[in-house]
Amino acid sequence: MDKIKNIFYFRVMLDWYTIKYLYPSAFSRFSEVMFPNIGVESVSTLELYDIKKLYHFFDKEGIFLIIEMYSKSNWDYCISLSNGFSFGPSKETKRTREEIESDGFIECFRFLDKKISEVVV
Image 1 (tube, rainbow, N blue to C red):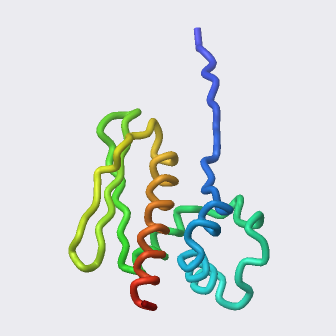
Image 2 (tube, helix red, strand yellow):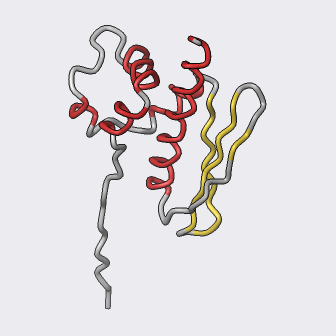
């Protein structure tokens, strides 16, 4: 007898409002690079943005997110910078790749914001 498995699909989204508030310089750079002609009219338009595209964006900025799976429900990330410094693993593992990617990208925005502010100062 076939068993029917319930598959729950959930979409892990970045909290774009928090990113814009906490890391305004990084969010501005993201907006300029990823949406060069129009920018981001409203943060709510990013709700369905494919966060996989952020790998390319951060790679160009010299911030590399590395996702690691220790077991099926134990995921973690590290961040490497183009200057050779590496940070990680994170303090807390997550149950899915999508959850850890979300946490990792928020941390990437923090690093980018710091990098931009150091250049300006």
